[in-house]
Image (tube, rainbow, N blue to C red):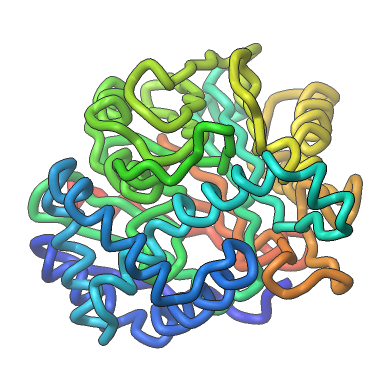
Amino acid sequence: MSGVTYPHVRVAGGPRERGRQYGEQARERVRRSVEAYGKVYEDLAGLSWGEALTLAGEYADAIDRFEPRYLEEMRGLAEGSGQTLEAVLAINVRTEIMFAAKAREAAAAPRAAQAGQRPRPPGECTSIAALPSVTDSGHTLLAQNWDWLPHTRDTLVVLEAEQDEGPAYVTAVEAGLLAKAGFNARGVAVATNALVSDADAGEVGVPYHVCLRALLDAEHLPAALAALQRARRSSSANYMLAHVSGLAIDVEGVPGDCSGLRLVDPADGLLVHTNHFTTAGVHDVGLWWMPDSPFRLQRARTLLAEREGPVTVSLLETVFADHTNHPVGICAHADPRDKSTEQGETIVSLIMDLDEQVMWLADGTPCSVPYRRLEYAGFFGVGA
């Protein structure tokens, strides 16, 4: 649940100035992100905050080589929020630090289970793309439930960025991070799902959230796919990409270069993905971490297959509010029996219409809060 409307942060200008504006407007939420991940790293990765800062600092050069503007955004964000650059890096590489720790734990899972110490980290997300051939409007829709730790109810923002170089974009993201799910003025949209493989060893490269930021700079889907191949990626992840032209692709990736990307085409006008690999040839740690993932995938596919008529925004709202296997269903809820750093729940739900340039956003679990209609045609017209 959520009793608040997530704040909107609107920024414009060059990368450092945009970052500074972002940090200033979301200063308290960035502080909360930094504070919360200090505890998360300790509980879920066995790292002190000082150790996390040291690890995070190792990624700065890789980000700078990939795209200097993104490191400049982080520098500005640090200045505006009153944090150090290392602290901002530490929350932007949370996936690399935590998932490498989880991959190591998975390898030792039998020993941990025998000792009664098997961890119960939070689950993650459900994403859906619907192409014009199956939607009532003939529009392209991309949608996602983003599930994560409950503290992110106090950190999420809707970031609206008008760039001096690159398209304007909107993303619903934890304060202090560069990007998550969203869409841009060129008609490119991104949804995403955490994945974990045995190759997630903390290799220094381009972090997951920096890849997401790069996708929101893409002019079209070929440019988006090229961005994921431009340098070595640090983490496994799933990127569901769609375009206003009516095209969509799902990209499952493991750490490394272009050879670690696996593409999945839509089936019957739809893409559905959760938090495990659907392509062969990967040692999938995510199934150990998030055993609810295959059942969320099956349930979402079933609800879509059993529909009467075309896919509508209302149908997607219903799918995202589904409680099968509660509390770890598509609409996820925190289990009070778990520690706070092991709980997971749906923090935000997004449905993006790429033709209308509209985002429907639920500020919390979609079973309990209505979706807000956010219109961005005017904003994108200015920042295209």
